Image (cartoon, rainbow, N blue to C red; front, side, top):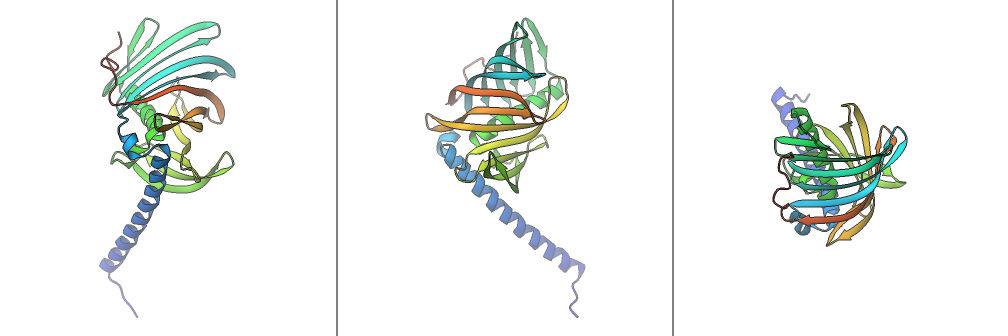
Length: 251
């Protein structure tokens, strides 16, 4: 009778685990590389150290559609500046948010509030949920753990799906059209205005070329299955560095 020592069992287990990991890594890289190529290629995307996006759309609260305009600048995973304006129940509201590494601020009208630690962490999650489907490159860094997940169907088409764990230890799923390689959906747990947690699904459609980089120009955001934001991208730019003062403290 063949006998295996505990050491032999351990060695066999390690070999099996290593081969499984290598196989999964190869599958993950195949999906990511195809997406990077579809979006414009690594050389082009790697020069996009900062991105600027402008859009318009509707924010849906309690079933009411509110027209909004927004613009955002993202640089890396820890610098973010956004502003929006919209009409809510007949009232015109403007707001701004800035994140600069470990500090952040929000401004509504003339009121400025400094973000607490939890708010800063939430903004950083917002950044990577926005940035990763745009360039994919962060997912190839050591900041993210990426694993294969079961294929899914998005808008009636097969999609390769990956499970991603971010720098904060929280995960999300990102799906790619199997034919084109383009990102078509992300699903993540997010916090709402009042700190409530939702399952947020974002669908990416109607990709257009912006100076060599493809960007989805129509996004539908659902929270717990209900429409939350309908957005159309009107401008998109990838730049080397954000203008001076973009991430300064709000006053």
